[in-house]
Structure formats: structure tokens, C-alpha cells
Image 1 (tube, one colour):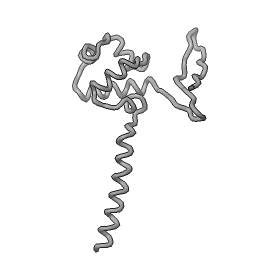
Image 2 (cartoon, rainbow, N blue to C red):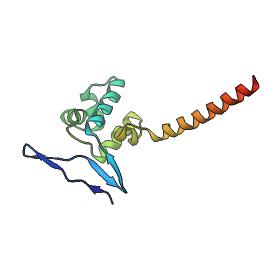
Image 3 (cartoon, rainbow, N blue to C red):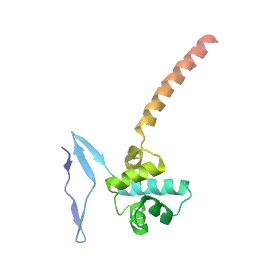
Length: 122
């Protein structure tokens, strides 16, 4: 079971670090980086915030606060964004697409093997 670390107080409100410890590893969810990824994907599709908000069923204000890193998404919204942009939830949350990283590593191994075969043929 993950342990959520305690938040700190700043100007009368509690600031949560969005940090979870799991089996000795620290995992971070950065709201600002998440918002940047959503904004980049929206701009790549050539959409305005109002258009995306209507498509995924949230208010323009809520989407704006997500993109600015002030609000986090619900699980349902995370799924809706993932399906709409056709990206993995891993990419939205961490900025890394683990499937693509594995495929890249396999390709690098194959390319190095091909390079050695080509050198042997010369």
C-alpha cells in the first residue's frame, strides 16, 4: 500500500507534494508537467481549450486550471484524455511511454547487430 507523504502549510493552505513512496522508491506526479503535456497535445491537434473541454465533457475553466498545473485530473478525465489524444496514460502522467522505450531498446540492439554483420561482410 503506498504511503502518501504529509503536505506542508503555506499561506494558510496545505500544499501536497504529490509524492508517493512505494517499496523504497519515490514516485512523483507533477501537475505542471502533466498540464504542459495536455496543452502540447491540444495544440498539436489545432484545438482551442473550449473545443477540447466540450469534447471531453469538462468546463473550460477546469481544463485551463489543469493546463496551468493548478488542478489534477480525475481517473475518468485521465482516461478520456488518453483515448481522445490516442496516447498512453503512462505518457500523460510521467511523460514517458514505456512501450515505446522497450521497442526503442530492441531496435537499438538489432541495429548494432546489423552494423556488426555489415562490418564482417566488408
